[in-house]
Amino acid sequence: MKKIFKVLLILIMLTVIMLGLSYMGLAYYYKDTYSYGTFINGIYATGKTPEDVNRELIEGEDFDTLYIGIEDKLYDVKAQDIDYSIDYLEPLKQYKRMQNPYLWITNILNGTKSRTVRPDTEYDADKLEKLMDKIGPDRLGEPFVCAIEYSEDGFILKDNKALQYDRDKCMDKVTQAIEDGQLYVIIGMECRKEADYTEEELKQKSIYDKISRYHDTSVTIDLEGEDITLTNAELDSLLVRDKEGLPAIDDMGALLITRESVADGLKDVIAPYNTYNNHFFKTHDGRTVHLTKGTLGNSVNTTGISDEVYDALIAGERNIRANLNYTRKMSEKEQESAAGIGNTYIEISLDEQRMYFYIDGELKMDINVVTGTHATGQDTPEGVYYIYNMKRNTYLVGENYRCFVYTWMPIVRGVGIHDATWRKLWESDTYLKSGSHGCINTPLEEAKYIYDHAYVGLPVIVYSYENSATEQTT
Image (cartoon, rainbow, N blue to C red):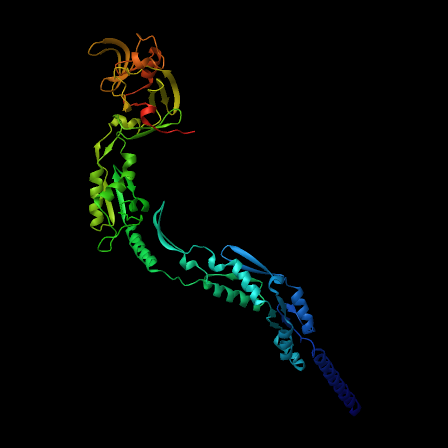
């Protein structure tokens, strides 16, 4: 029994000795290498020397280029351009000195150890300064101004002074990134320069604050149920401007508005609805004529509208509604044909002595006609008219004539479109000496075709390029 106990005791002592020797062996092994379960910057470092880990870290990264991101641009700085080098050895050695090789077993008990170390870096600060000068972060977005400008959206404040970068802040961030071994640097809001406004710029900001509050005003013109709400640009057109084109300020420091400025500003807004004696018409060959006479169209009471809007603005109202009243209103039949000329109409060119009949935008007729005699001052009147009556088989009676026509379509004061069976010449210069008393003489068959397809209210445009043309479209 004693013998067995003695053997067991010897075995236990040998086991303890063996374990002790193994423990001490591993402690010796970890004397120059990292202990069990050590990760450094994502690399498994157990059993590796600082030199081994340093080599792996350097080889595992591309340190040839430093990338600097500013706004939507990415600038690359070559390491060789600034004599840039990187080394982890000293930080790795320092961390190794912190590990007690005889306490390696604690890593097994406490789990793995993950560590991040920053490298030692070297670079030429002067060369980096020169490269930053080339990038010029403080110059991006030049010129830096704060001023009111007029755009298609009305008055806007162009102010980019708060977007200027502070060069020293940018330099500090890049320098810190290099010293931390970072390869990507994003320069953002933290590197902006504090805006420094001049006295004139502060004045511009003050005026724009007034404009912004003014833009909160809603001006709506009611056109028989159709609302026309002014845009900011149209609102701004109601303001008085100073000699520099900026909104003028009155003695009380408010935006200056007058009856005249409101009336002038509303002209363009109302123009599409003020079509009586104010038509811009594109002819068959692409030219545009401006006709200021006729009977087709509406005439708007612009003075009444502008006064109503002005009074409301001066009273400080924010939701203004004004009625678009007419001094002349198109007839119901005219409105059926179109709010204006539309795409079904008769076009008469006095220069060419031609008539063009369009139905739903399609040219149905292109013929020679003879208009009023030029030599006797009986020229067919230019303007935008409409057929206001239609008769078949009737007599036309004047001071010294009475003639029978199969078709009669008057457009203004006894002037109309009709057949002329007595006429033999239909040349382009016939009207100069042998034209009509003002009517548009038309060959019989063509006159019948027009009559069969026309209606009361059909627009008729009479023009002369010599008198009315405004432009030529190629």
